Image (cartoon, rainbow, N blue to C red; front, top):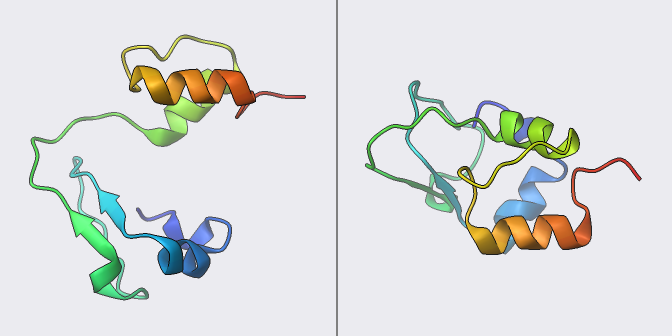
Length: 84
């Protein structure tokens, strides 16, 4: 979540939805944003990077074991993260 402030329109995102933050190997501070807009999980940590998933998708590499089938299907149908 250290990159969240760099996302396109983070305040707009927070006005639409709460963000679920999955616990990973390091904790991140989000003090610049309202704390009631984030839900932190207490799940066991996993080492999966959304950046790595996006890179794999852009390169056409499989991500079947990294994403739910419905999400992967949507990404493939809409060609999200692919060069056009």
